[in-house]
Length: 124
Image (cartoon, rainbow, N blue to C red; front, side, top):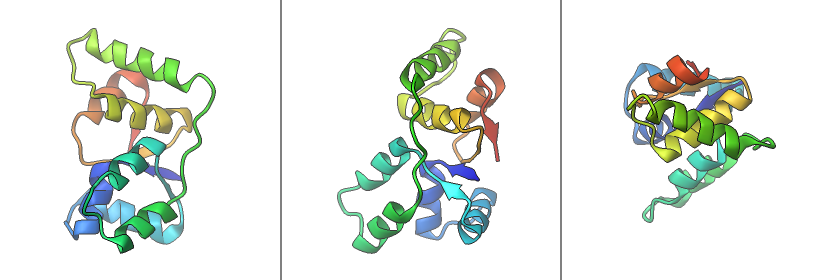
């Protein structure tokens, strides 16, 4: 199994090219891709989202939130912020879900590299 970030799924839907999109497409074909509830929320928040895209996004399996998730996410974010590194809240929550499930994250957002270096996130 592998997790996917919002930015990669948006790129996939838009038909963009990239290594992350290729990995997402392969994981999708293999039935091994999952998304966090935060990524689902970000994706479905687009007011002009076509119904076919909503149906596709809603078909993706969701990562379960484990007990203590919110505390671990806060600690991960604090770790990065204490080093003056960027740690947006949605990215923190997406990273923590992948960390909790020990899954690599497919992404195109460079900010996740800080979670990989300091918090144990695996990048695909």
